[in-house]
Amino acid sequence: MEESRPIEVSPRHRIVIGEDYLPMIDRAPREDFVVRTLAKRVISGRPMMMGELVVAGAATRQAYPLAQKYPLHFRKTYYPGRLHGDPCLELERHTLASQLVPVPPPIGCTRNTFRSCFLPGSALDRLSPLGTEPDESNVVHAQQMSLATATGLWSLLQQAYDVLTTMQEGGLTHGDAYPHNFIVCPSPLEVLPVDFERAIVRDEVELSHWEQRCQQDRDLLLKLAVYLQCGLGQQRGTLAREALSRLEELVRPAEVFRRAITERSHGEPFT
Image 1 (cartoon, rainbow, N blue to C red):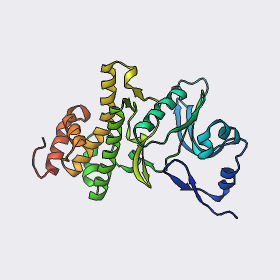
Image 2: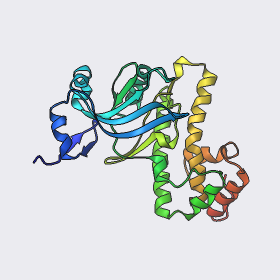
Image 3: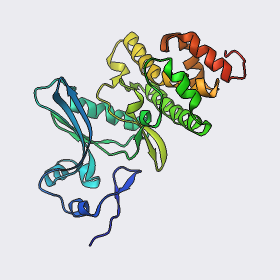
Image 4: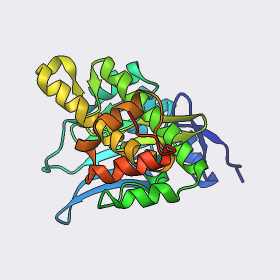
């Protein structure tokens, strides 16, 4: 019986898979073999997209050199006839992102499929109890978190914010920068963006539209920064300052959050 062994899934990540899959890693099956469904998008009961961890089949490995190197990878399939973005355009955006930040390059695409390296880890939003409705409920959640949890989340959020900022400075914004589109990989520990379906290139849009989309992306992370400071108190750095400067636009009622942050900041009003 063959023992489990680490399998490369990106230039920096390896995972151990069940021994039953190892023969397919070494000798490609005729078609892609689905190991696990990771994401599914359904609208009005109709499937729009399926995201799966697959072992690449023989035809896939022949079509894409990176599928030969990383036979275990992520495949996103869009159902024919349903509205969706252009996977080949997503490949271009993802390629640009990989040149700006440590995101593995994409593997390939067709008219209805997109392939990329699998990033082992958890989405940032799944590591946090924050993000509930209404906004005000997050004050209590943040204040009840342990110091270790709150400081750990702040560090991860800072990494996500830095990655987004680096991309924007390089002329690309994510377009959908919710915490669920940032994967926290434990080994090595890093926060990486995924899903560039809605990414925007600065040179392809009007400046006003570019600036608006950049701010919208940052706001999706800044809101979490406001929540966390309700538990930690006011923090230092660009992330904290921008979050607090936009508090009125990010959360309601703003005064509740302002008071909570002030109280956690040893009674000193934040600036």
